[in-house]
Amino acid sequence: MGGIGSGRPSGLGRNTVETCRAIDVNRLNREGCLRPGWAGGWQWSRDGEKVASINLRAEEDRLHLSYRVRVAGGDWEDVDETVRIVRVPCRFGGTRPYFICPGVVNGISCGRRVVKLHGSGRYFLCRHCYRLAHASQSEGAWDRALRRANKIRMRLGGEPGMASPFPPRPKGMWRRTYERLRNEVFEAEQLADEAFLIQAEKLLTRIDNPKRKRTFWP
Ligand SMILES: [Zn+2]
Image 1: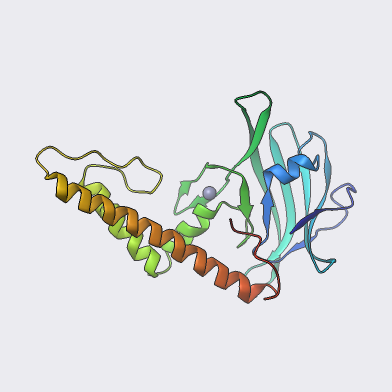
Image 2 (image 1 turned 30 degrees about the vertical axis):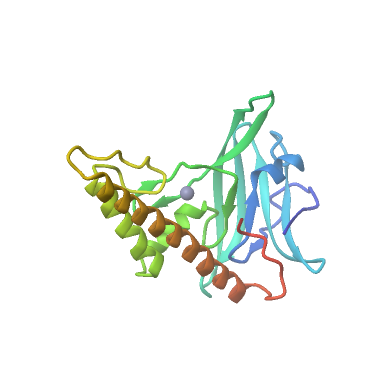
């Protein structure tokens, strides 16, 4: 998908981004784009032709993105986005960089430590943010599945969300009942995950050339 740009200084004109591009922090790191002071372009190409690009500028602990974007066939907009970078020590020495997702969905800041940010809308955000944004707008199958899972989690005294630890069996609940509920949650969450990927892929196919390889989602 991505490719290193010319490395010329940013600010020489805004580049454009179609929706559904992704940036990968490890790839940027390998290409030297996270070195403090580095500025240049990053581009996506297809069949050797540039299809989208953004300008990047790196500081010690953040990366500035600037680009033009058109969301859902609207007008082109200039967007500046700043993404924090954290470096987490590896077990055997060295560090590994991560993006801190700058997303704010339904008034809640994301702040997740992620490897990829997706330009599926106006901003580059993590997959969870796009999923949440979508959940608040639609009543899709995976949306319903997630709600069902969250209801059970809370009934068991836990927190909603796949990232939360699964609550232990409440006192007085039959083990069999607990196990049935736990399976229901895991199945619903797996369904939600798969349905989301299918939906995202459909969207990508619609936007991108169908011959393109699937590269944006794991
Ligand atoms: Zn996020």
